[in-house]
Image (tube, rainbow, N blue to C red; front, side, top):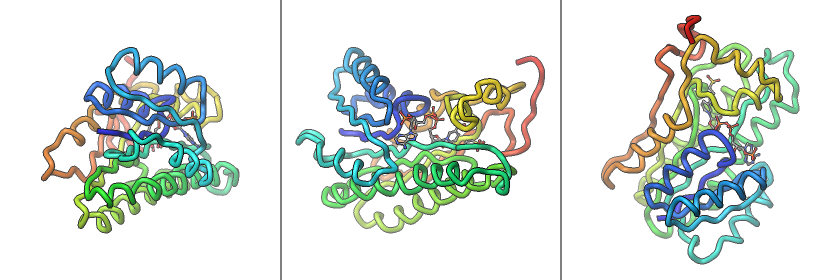
Length: 253
Ligand code: NDP
Ligand code: 8X3
């Protein structure tokens, strides 16, 4: 079985790559940071007896996505599992105070990038009349919170695309799932706050956030169901997070 994962250089994508290699999947791993990709490639090959191919490209660039896809060697002609994970939040301010560049980056990555990659991989799945697409969405795709308008909009779009794909692909036996996490401590908040580690750390103060391993657990559950079972979505939160804006924080952790 071959899996194609976007955004493995950090966070969920990295944990998912290790988990899928452990389950015996051959992997196409992707991201923009070449040094990290190379290191991960080596670690995966050393630890697991699977085939790994790394492709360095920016999913916002449709031409680069096409070139990467067309470079796939024969053994990766068939992609059984697509994990659309690459994504980000940029900024956490009111709509009126936000930068247009941040809005564009979120829309171009979380929506357009996901569409570019999926559009390339779906035809092969249709041809095989099998496959599984798992989109990493967010609780932000279900609820909107203050200072998150466009990030939330991008994840609402991911959910609409997930549901639309499920409707369009059901006749080919292709499963379409999503995972919608609440707060998880990865590099997500560091990226969101443009490298301000103090602000990023404060996001999780007084609570125990999810980890990338928790998301890999959910993903493992989804991919290990029998052929007749399709998980539509797993919405997973830290126990201390009730929804996007009500969390129970204490000073013990
Ligand atoms: P990280 O910042 O740790 O990882 C994000 C990954 O996305 C990196 O590997 C990064 O790779 C990749 N990426 C970002 N932009 C691009 C791009 N333009 N082209 C290719 N790859 C890109 O964050 P997470 O692991 O937390 O985030 C993964 C997904 O989970 C995202 O879609 C995020 O929205 C979602 N999510 C995160 C939550 C959280 O609280 N952490 C909760 C809910 C959902 P590189 O920089 O090398 O390109
Ligand atoms: C990231 C989680 O709570 O910041 O998608 O929206 S949250």
